[in-house]
Amino acid sequence: MTDTLTDTFWKNMSKIHVILLGTDNGNPVPMAPLARQDDNAIWFITSADHDTFKAAKTGQEAKIYLGDSAGNMYGTIKGHLSASDDSDKLDDLWTPMAGAWFENGREDDSVRLMKYTPTEAEIWASDGMAKHLFETIRANITDDTPDSGEYGIIHF
Image 1 (cartoon, helix red, strand yellow):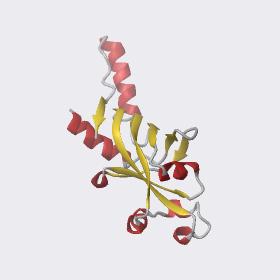
Image 2: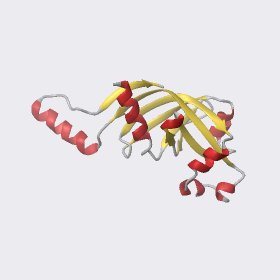
Image 3: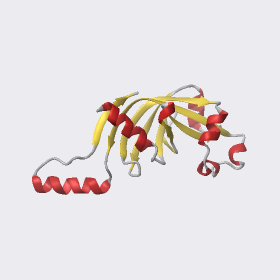
C-alpha cells in the first residue's frame, strides 16, 4: 500500500498550486510548491527577505498543510527546509507565475530557492468531489461505509 500511496502522493503534489508552509519561526504561509519526485523534494521560489527563507538558511524543520481539491489530497507533511544555491535547478523550476512576484523576474537579486525534503506525510488522497458525493449517497442507501479514497502515513 505504501508504494502505491507514495506514487499517488507525488502525482497529486504535482497538481497542487498552493500549500501552507509552517516553520518554528512563525505562522504557516501560503506558498506555491514545485514537487519533484526524482529529487525527493518539494521546491519553493521565494524572496531573500521572506521569513521562510530565513528559516531555510538555518535548516529548520517545517510542516506543509495540504487542503487542495485540484490535487485531491489533504493532510500534513513533515520535513526539513533548506536554502539552495543551485542556479540550474532554479532555472529549471522558474515559471511565469514566479516571475510575477519579482520586479526584475528571474534576474531579480532577491530571488531565492528553497528545498523541502519530506520525512513523513499523513495524507488522504481522494478521487475528487464527484466520487465523494457518489460514495456518500451510496453509503446512505446501502448502510455501507463510503470509499473516501486512500489514507495512510508515508515515510520517505
